[in-house]
Image (cartoon, rainbow over all chains, first blue to last red):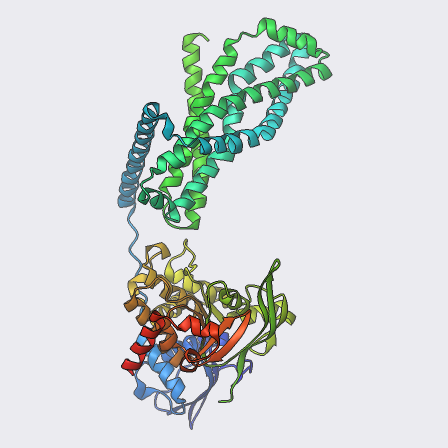
Length: 365
Length: 259
């Protein structure tokens, strides 16, 4: 028997009887389905078979034609084929119904309970983290300094080029767009305030947070989700280690340290970009720019921007790590949690930024 | 039935950088055999298995599967050949975002366009053939126990009724009762489905129970391919060392007392 011979399945019906022939196997599944749908077997005739190949997929189709009871099976089956048919007949049957899906009301209820559960988990997470930070004040030696340094390098140092470049471009764009308007009024010198205030107060911390959420927050979520699935987090627990102390606290402390530094960098790069465009487009030399910057931009604007940075870092680490720890299931879940961590952290960062704006407006800063 | 050679390997060499795993390795597998690949850890059993499964290319030598040399295949022939080979991975490697039934249906659906009800029916048959309970059908792989996961992996490998079934450590991680039930399932499938089995295993009970031929890998080649009885009495020191320990003896004694 050679598997590569091509003899399509066929059913020959005439007055003498019915003959089943050909290969009844997976290669001809489609033909078999068509054949069985088209043919009406005349039950009064005797059926005989002279089959080539048969496998389980083909046997199932044959059973549909001839029925599960061995008495009605055709003559001429080889012992192997009979055995296969018997096995398939014994094991075939209806597909069980999937669990019924919930109606919309029950689904809504389930989702609500689940969301409430998530809120509780967030609180839980935040509580554990706070307790750990408090504990750290009493036992500073428990901090995994090496892991903090690792975070400083990966999420701080390695982010320098991208943040510097993007902030520089952002500053240049603001100066260019603003300069066009200012030039029509002959108010070229005010480009300094325009660029400095928008960057220092708002855009530098924001662009930093967005890049860090995309670069580092997603990485935290993916790392923790994968570790969760490999049972690595359980392994840490079983070794008597606190997974939060190993995996989350170093990220939190590292990112809260490095985020203000990145924000200062992006402020400097952004103002540099603005300065370049000002000198090219508005003929405002860098010296004049810096003099004006020193005399008319108050240092409070710098602090207003800087104070947001650690808060944004806190949000990003919290969301990223929590999404990672919540992951259950398979590969798809890692992707879902990672996406969600980025979306949620940027969402929360912008909300926090809005709250800051209101707060600073009330304070008159 | 004439004897057909399904797998014919000649002068195979595999290297990872400067590390040589196989050198001048020859192996033939006849249709209908139940062959186990054994050998110490790191002797290249799993690598050989993935070369047979067309998942990895050898550096030298010739592999013929179903009479076709694998280095000269067209894309179409390659796809056709892959459908004739089922592979069960050690950890199951079921797609975690699909239910067990969808995992099994995947290759049938891609093979020919058939109505969904028929696909489900075919997949359910495979599920039952491997001894899984019906309610496993709509579960996700991560909800299954280790033993059920391995059966589901076999069911997926059998979806297109391959002639050659490759299994990587099928009974590793199963409890003795589960492992022995798994062995019986393999034997039942082999007896009825015209299957050729190649398994990599360290499970001595399986070696005695399931296989009719055992190929021992050592010194970068196949040292011997013999039935288990003869192999365990082989005088090559490496084979002697592999079987000359208490665990191996106990398995052998158990088999003899059962017979």
